[in-house]
Amino acid sequence: MSNFKQILVVGGAGYIGSHIVHDLCDAGYSVTIFDNLSTGLIENLDPRAEFFQGDILQLPDLQKAFSKPVDVVFHFAALKAAGESMLIPEKFSTNNITGTINLLNIMQAHAVKYIVFSSSAAVYGNPQYLPIDEKHPLQPINYYGYTKLVIEQVLDWYDRLKGLRYAALRYFNATGYDVKGRIRGKEKNPGNLSPIIMEVAAGTRPILQVFGDDYHTPDGTCIRDYIHVSDLAEAHLLAMNYLVEKEKSLIVNLGTGRGYSVLEMLETARKISGLPIPHTIGPRRPGDPPELYADCQLAAKLLQWKAKYSSVEQIIESMCHVYLG
Ligand SMILES: NC(=O)c1ccc[n+]([C@@H]2O[C@H](COP(=O)([O-])OP(=O)(O)OC[C@H]3O[C@@H](n4cnc5c(N)ncnc54)[C@H](O)[C@@H]3O)[C@@H](O)[C@H]2O)c1
Image (cartoon, rainbow, N blue to C red; front, side, top):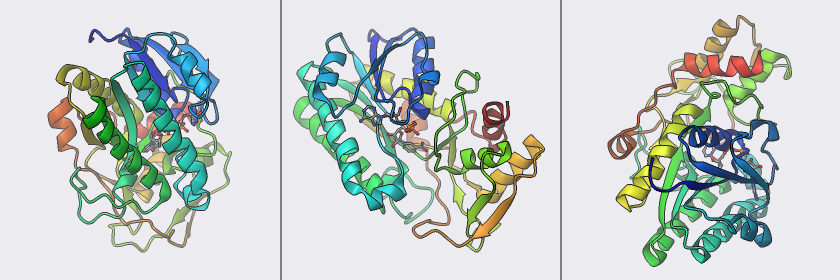
């Protein structure tokens, strides 16, 4: 553990943030969670962490959160529904971009130098080659991805002008639930494949709609790189240590380097749950590339990190504990 002890986790009641909070508390850090609970869940808060209900759009809330010492900020707070971002971009500009700039400015005012930021593979847009490495052109195809790219650029300027050190972690498809079984609160209105499969398995959603089975992939359905949230959690702690020890900013992909198709995920869920999980094939969804998976060699080299929990079986098993009890 580094000398830095006071961690502020913005968005720490959310799906990914709550997992990182548990690992930070396990590692002995003193953690404060800052979250407006718009999508976050009280039940996923680690009781060892202090909770402050606040909004990054409200400067008085941020001022209160920074009235106690902070060494490192983890920033998960964002809107993430790519489809909605194309319909109501202004909501995403405000929450994601303005909210992050508020956070960076208050960090400057309090001389807080380190931030670990949730970026996304959405910064790349349609793959021009596979696997996608960090040098791939940055051409987001939805406004959500654009907000992440803008924030990465602001981070880079603050690094050059103000000495901020940041880790921009470009997650591929975050999935699964805590391998230690501590997080039980399910995401509300999930947009990702695996929670939707599990909702159908649990009977809270009638059927899985598959968007196209005529892609040029082995079974015709889209292939994505699913990274277990417990693997993401490990990478976040390593990224924090990298920033503090090396005094250098960092941009890395976090994925597994291999993809699974929609039908592979579904078949594994059927096998592990023993449930039929009905599905129907619908038309392709505009803007869905057939295949997306990461080149993760840079994260392996810089952070000595590699996904350990992200086989399709481990992912589905961890979700069955939460969705099927
Ligand atoms: N889930 C994925 O597959 C994925 C992939 C790539 C990147 N990301 C990014 O990772 C981060 C976390 O995603 P998640 O899946 O945990 O989403 P989530 O919605 O579960 O978590 C976001 C958290 O931030 C809080 N929040 C949102 N706006 C806020 C505001 N204005 N002030 C204070 N708190 C606010 C929410 O209440 C929630 O607890 C996001 O930045 C997202 O864009 C997620």
